[in-house]
Image (tube, rainbow over all chains, first blue to last red):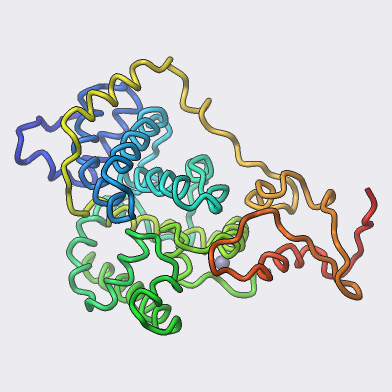
Length: 197
Length: 152
Ligand SMILES: [Zn+2]
């Protein structure tokens, strides 16, 4: 496998396929250099994720470390047919955040369950091709959503705000929040299908 | 129980961890039984993964990688499988529920609350603002008809 060298500026533009190859390689060889590349790509993004979720700078860094300790330990279980590297690392980070901030839900979000899940064939559009392109597509289509819709999608993502919290926060009726979220997700799905063509 | 499926907005809330605890439990029980919704959850999680991949970047401290490396290299090499536990499975008991109960349906201490109605309050802490009644009802569907002896 060809590894990208760390040449400063361009280091943070890896594609989904490259990221998945790195994670797979980490599982096979536990190379420090590969680990560093994954760290350099994801750590700054995870920092935003944890900070926007309400963690202090200190706690964010602690959670980034925890995330990567798990990545190191479990990399050999990564299977690029099941999930992209970003999705795999996202679930680890999400579970850690729940463990820290939403203790009452922690019994539901365990890495084991995610990693043990069998391939879901039917109902899922996520073949390899789709997986490896999805992030680039999302980047293109997210800005196409009306602001009021993408705001609601992001509030759930970054702040794990429940529908009722979002409603409070935006001073909207709960029904409006749910329907906007439904619209946004349906729209995203359509846009993603369109981009793929 | 599979009369209706999970909506996109519920799956998104579940994928982002933002569903209140009791509701999330119901969702995860449904997911264990429904491959269609499981596939759609995978899509929602892929969307979340893509959002992480395209998130803004904020620089972590300079020494973080070295600290991290020191930490993982100090660990004994253990196969990844040793860090994972097979999800518990028992006939008819979704593993999410098993994890909450710690035992199967047969050992539940049901409480009579009305003619032919028994309930069991799940030993989980409901999320803020969540109705506790939801939790009381959740195991109800397992014993709508036949009676369990409330012995023991
Ligand atoms: Zn379903």
